[in-house]
Image 1 (cartoon, rainbow, N blue to C red):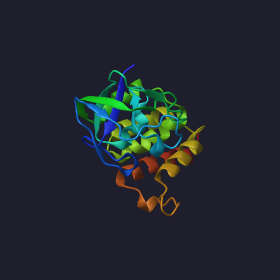
Image 2 (tube, rainbow, N blue to C red; image 1 turned 135 degrees about the vertical axis):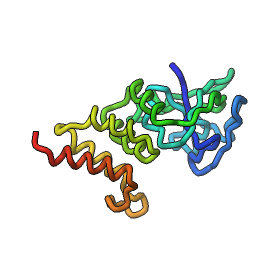
Image 3 (cartoon, helix red, strand yellow; image 1 turned 60 degrees about the horizontal axis):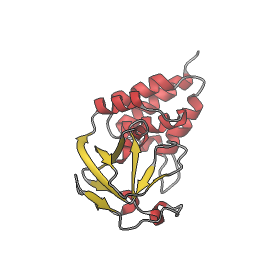
Length: 191
C-alpha cells in the first residue's frame, strides 16, 4: 500500500496552523494525542493511501510520497468518506513532490476505491482545482438518473457557503457551474 499526502507546496493549512514540512527529513508533530477524537487535540500529521486520496486532492496542489520513520505511531482514523484512507502519525517523511495535474488526477481516479457518494464530492473538489477532465469523467462514469438526486445533494453540500449555510449557484466558479449544469441536464433528461 502506497501512502501519500497532499499539500499546497510544502505547507499544510490543516487546522489553520500553516505547518511547513521539511522534505526528505523526519517531521515530528508538536502535538500528539492519539486517543483524542478531535483532530486539533489529536495533532500529528494526516495522510492517505493512493486509492483514497482522490477525495482529498482539494487540499493542495502538490502530492508527496509518505514514508513512516522508525518509532512512529500510526492510527487509522475512522472516516466514512474514505474508510481506511485517513491516517495520522506523530512522525512523517515526505518525498518525491509532484505538482498535481489533471492527468495525475485521472490516474488516481482509475486507482480509486472510495464509497459511491464520495466520488460526487471528489468530482466537485477536482473541478475547483481545475482538473476538469477528471471531474467530467467521474460525472459520466458515476452519475445517472437513478442517483442524480444524491449527486446533486452532495454537490450542493460541498458548495454551500459555510458562513451563510446557503447554496447559491451564482457563487459557483466557472468549473463548478459547468459541472452543476451537467448534473441538471441529467436530472432534467428523459430516460
